[in-house]
Length: 157
Image 1 (cartoon, rainbow, N blue to C red):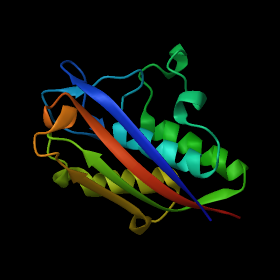
Image 2: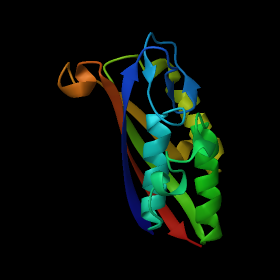
Image 3: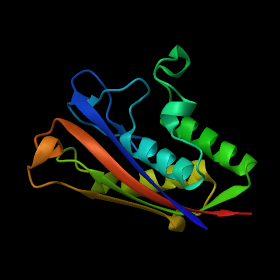
Image 4: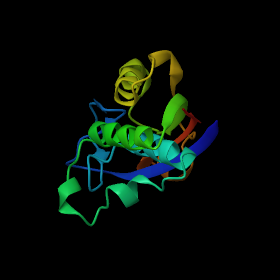
């Protein structure tokens, strides 16, 4: 068994969607990025790749390649899962935390978990998504961005 950690952050801006965990969350601000900027799925993808010592999503899907402009991060996560399976790994479980002052995540967490489980080909009971504010502190507390952490346990089969 191996464990990996992932972290991602994206700036909140006007004129973009706020897609987190594959869910389009109604919000006056959205996340800025080359792809759809899904901060949670990026952290999870990095945790999975890290557990398998296979780099990160920036290596697989570079922001210098127009091919990934506006990419759906659920599709990118699915590709990550295909790549680790080719190397003989399977995901055991995922635990993640979203750090955001806004928008409220609680109403969307089950949908996020279902999206992640489907993309990773694991049971939803093996996917944890939590959310917290930072009590108005730091860049997330100031509503300048959203961050996410994730850990993933994989096993070689």
